[in-house]
Image (tube, rainbow, N blue to C red; front, side):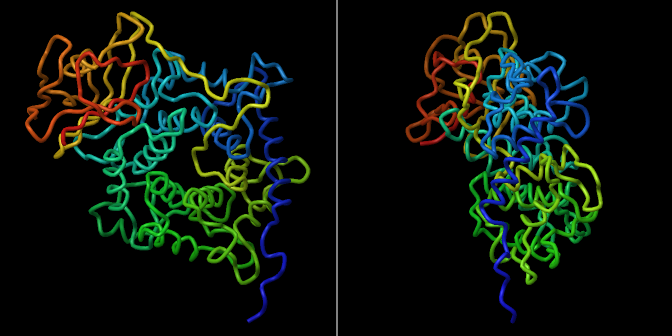
Length: 446
C-alpha cells in the first residue's frame, strides 16, 4: 500500500486561519441594527458558530457600537411577545435555546415572560412519550436533546433530569435506520422506513444529540452511525456523498456530530486513501480572501448558511457550545432572575413517580418576585401544557411537605423529592422558594 501523504490532514495553522477568516465573514453578515435572526434558514445559527470559534456574541457589534451588540439584539428578539409567530413549532424553541445558550443568554431566563426550556417542555407528546412536537417530524426530538442536554446551567451543570433525556434517547435508538444513520422523519415501527437510506445531515445531528445526552462514543448506536458516515466518504475530496449531492452544509452537520462525540474527523476512519478528510473538503469550500463558504463546489459566491455550518465544524464545535468569555469586559451571561409581578411566566416541570414520567410547561402569574413550589403545582392542575402533569396534590394549601402527588403517597421507603436546575434533590415542600426560570424535577423514591 502507498504511504499516506504527509499533507493528509489540515494543519492546526490552516484550521486556525480558516476559523479566523470564517468569523470575519460572519461578522460581515450582521445587519446595521445588530441583528442576525431572519426568515428561512435563519442566520441566528451564527451564534453557535461564533461560540465554537471562541467569539462572544456580545463582542459582535456593527461599527463597534456596543448598544447594538448581537447578544442584546437577539435577546430582545426572543423576548418579543410576537416571537416566534402565530403557529410555532417545537424546533423554533429548540433553535432558540441552542443559540441563546451559545450567545451567553440563559435560555430559561431570557426575560420575565420568556423561558425557552419551558417552551420546549410544552411540546412533549403524552401520546408518544419520548417525542417532542409531531412524532412524524423526528428532527424535533433530536433537537430537543441537543437543546435540553446541550444548554447547561450557567455553572455548567445539567439542568434537566437524566430520566427525561433517557426517554428520548430510547426514542432516538428506535429510529436508527438499518444502514446506521437517521433521517428527518419518524421510522420507528416501520420496517420500510428503517430500511430506507439515511441522511448525512440528520445522522450528524442525531449522533450529537446522543453524545450530549450521555451516550458514549463506544455505544453501538454511535459506532453504527460512524460506519455509515465512513461509507459515504468520497476518496478524492474527503467530502460525504450526501442525499442532495456534495455540499458544505451536510458535511458541516456530519463533522459537528463527530465533534460532539469526540471523534476526530481527520484521522482513522475519516482519512481517505487519497489522504483527504472532511475538514480538508470544508476548508476547500472557503473563499480566500473573504472567509465565506460556498454551498456547492461549483458555486461562485458564498452562502451565509453554509458559512455558519462550515465554520462551526472546522472550529471543532458540536451544535451547542458554552459561550466564551467576552473580550470587551461584558458579563459572560445575561439573565432575568426575578418574576415580574402580574406578568405571566412559564416554568419547566417533570413529575417522575418511578413508573411514568410526566413533562409539562406550567403557566402562572406571580404576585411577587419569587413564587413557591406549592403555587407552581397548584397552577399545574389547570394550566399545564401538555395537560395532566399534576392531577392531584396533598396538601392543597399551606406550606407543608408534599405527602401525595398524582396518587402516589409518601411511605416509609419512598417520598416525593424536588430538584431545581439539576441540584441535589430534597424533600418536596409547598413553601420551597422557586425563582424565575427554575427547571423543576419532582421524583418519587427513596
